[in-house]
Structures are given as structure tokens and as C-alpha cells.
Amino acid sequence: MSNISDFYRDKVVFVTGGTGFIGKIVVEKLLRTSEVKQVILLVREKKNTLPEQRIKDICACPVFDRLTKKSPNYKDRIKVVEGDLEKENLSLSAESMEYLRENVNIILHIAATVKFDEEIIKAIRINLLGTREALEIGKHAKNMESFIYVSTAYSNSYTDHIEERVYPVDFNPEKVLANLQDEKMKEELFKYSLKWPNTYTFTKSLAEVLTQNYRQYFPVAVLRPSCVMPAIDEPIPGWCDSIYGPNGTFIGWYYGLIRTTQIDPHVQIDTVPVDYVSNAIIAVGWKTYATREQEKEVLVYNCISSADNPLTFDERRLECAKVVEKHPLLTGLYTPLSIVTSSDTMFRIYSLFLHYLPAFVLDTAMRLRGEKPRLVSTYNKIDKVVETVRKFTNTTFFFDNQNMRDLYVQMNSADHRQYPCDNRNYSWRLYFERVVPGLKKYFFKEDLNNVKQARLVQRKKELTVHSILAVILALILFQLYYLLF
Image (cartoon, rainbow, N blue to C red; front, side, top):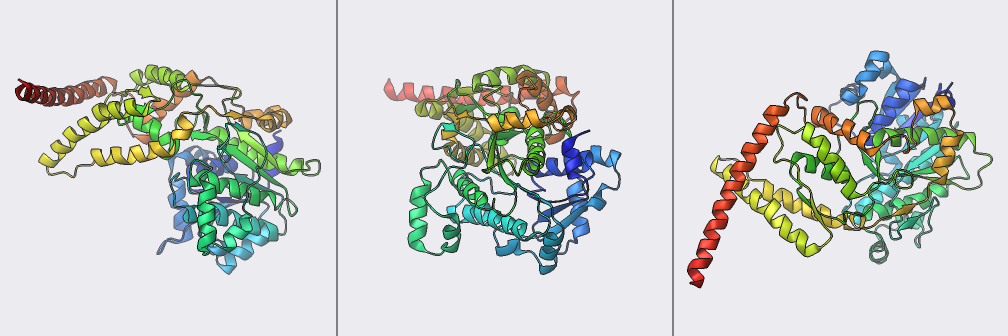
């Protein structure tokens, strides 16, 4: 019998971020594999939409199809409370707050802004204030058993060796929240934050310190996933509905939009399937309560793959190229291509010829058809994103993950089957063989059997664009010849 499933039986679990990429998988897995009494979801207020309708909208997602077949009435175990991470008390109504305090046993705090270039005060309000308010709910809950804060493996990425511990910061998180209107403090905070690659990682680090301070009230743990990628197994292989971070670049590459990248091909990239992350969140919720009396400190779990199942960017490129050949996109912009360089100069040259010139040609064609041009502006946005992740794409990080390994050891065989989260369990070849067709079917909504048609359409697109580019290049060379001779 699964100890983890048994722990969640008859419990009330409050999930923030339950409508997001990771959160939906967590909610589905809890409802499908345990007899959890109720899952409470924090959602933003939506005028003229009743909570019952919000539940229907959330559960319309294909990730709940498997659960629907097993438990058609599972929606009865979901409750929605309307709130806002940026507001005091999460902007919850008095009735909702009272319900949470009376009933909640476990809080899984997943919600955050994942925009790397978010303005610092807004990032603090969402990632730090939101965390403080979730912790306060736990502090006043009558039967609180476990609080899991979902951070990021890169919360302390100013160093390339990241241990499983909460790193100290020079600013008291509570004082930061109390003085957000103080211009001097904001200026000092901004200067200090430059130690981190972006405001996302900085504010997640602050929130870890804040979370640690609540250990005196209830069992607390921090889970740090690395780059979260599409599911390998559950509930749907290849499932992904997020275009942020590594998902966006991977999907953009598959679509043929991102054809060159500024990255060191020998750098180890650390990615984890979303279902393994969700299983880890659920498992850590159990272990944090089960071992509460013997743990003297807040445990941090680096949920990463590079320590046990390493993969370089070049290895990923080769593995993906094989799979994509079998599953081309009919709607893709071009055939996927990946030319990489760590040189800023070479990246700009490649980007000019592989991104901007073809984009200019296609935008011109759109204008002639009376459509709004969008490709050049899209590449401008992509370049801004590339700048915010430069640190991660050109650095091999070394993560400790002994706490994660200890978690695997303490899980029994039923837990291992029900909540797999050991990244040694799969090969990257198997992962991409499952993920790529899953993306084609569920993200791009294409028929997996349209291979011949997709290849033909892609060849026509490339022939047209390359022919136009050849004519433009010939005209430029002719003009140069005319000017010089």
C-alpha cells in the first residue's frame, strides 16, 4: 500500500497555482491516486463567473480526461476560492479565509510569476508577499500538517554549486514587504538583486528564507525543480500548456521558429518532466509530516536531473533531431534546425540570416495579403528572452540532491510505482520519443499520421523563402559589383 496515498486520505489540500502548468498535474494526480477529501484551488477573481463554472473551465483541460473515466464525480472534491497573490490576505473573502483556517491540513504553494524580466516590485509582491500570505494561512489553520514551498533550483544561481539548503540573504524578507514604498530601500534592493541573473530567481531566494522562518509553527519544506518540461508519462505523455522558460524555446525550435541559439553546446542542461516534479511535490508533502520530529532544519530538495541523468545541449539536439524527423509539423514554420554558438558575434550573424531576413520576407508577404506582420517583432521578443537566460545557457550548474535520494529510499515500492520522481528511471531518448509526438498531438493539435503531407508542405515553404532570399542576395551582390566596378 502506498504510504503517500494513505497520508492524503481524508485530507484537505490547499493548492496555489493549481490552474498552472505544474499545478494542474498535481491536482489531477492527487484526485486520481488518493482519497483526498478536498482540493481547494486559489484562482483570480473573474467577474460574472460563478465558482462552479470556474471548476468546469479548469477541468475541461485534457489532463483530467483520465481522471474523469476513473471518477466521474471528482469535481465534487474541488473547491475554488477567489483571491490574488499580490494582495494582503490574498484578497480572500472573510468566509473563504475562515473556511481555510478551519479545514486545511496541507498547503502546496506553487503559484509564482515565472517572467524572468518581471519588474522587481511586482515580482516581490507575487513571489514574496504571496508566499507570506500562504504561510500565514497555515499559521492560523487549526489542523496544519505540512507546507511545501515550490521554489526553483536556480534560486541561488549566483554560484554554480548549489546545495540543498536555504541560503542567507542580506535583506529581511518581512522588512522588505513592510517598506515597499520606501524609495531608498527599493534602490538598495535593486542593487542587491543584481547579484542574481533576474528578478525571478532573486525573489524566490527571498521567499525561501521567509518560508524557513515559519518552521516553528508547522512542518515546512522547500522543493526546487530545475527547468520543468513536458510530461513523460502522466496524465498524458508530452503534455504541455506553458510557453514560458525552456518549454517556450523547445516548442519554438520544434515549430521551426527558433533556428539558432546562443548557448555552449557542451553545457549540461538540467530539465525535469512535469509529472516527476508533481510527484515530488506530493511525496515531499508526505515526508515532511512523517519525519517532522527528527528533522532539526527545514529540508530543501533539489529536484534536478543532471546529478544522476546528465544531458548536454548537443546531446539533446541529436536525440531530438531523430524524433522530429518521424513527427514533422504540418503547421510548422520551417523544418527544425539548431545552429548553436556561445559567441555573441556569431549568434547575431546566424540570427540575421536564419531569423530576421526570412522573417522580413514573410512579413512582407503578410502585408501584401493585407495581414498584420508579426515575425520580426516576435524575434525581437525572443532576443530579449535570450538575454535573460544567457546565464543558464552558458553555465553548467552542479547540484547536490542527497535529500531527494533519501526521499526515494524512504518511499516504498507502491510509492515508487504511484509517484515516480527518481530521474534515473528513464533515458533521454525515451523521453523525447514520448514528448515530441505528444506535443504534436496536444499542443499543436495535429494528426500524428500526416507525416507525408507535413514534409511536403515544409519543403514548399522552405523552397519559397530560400528562393526569395537568393534573389535578394543576388540583387545585393549585383549592386555591390555595380558600385565597385
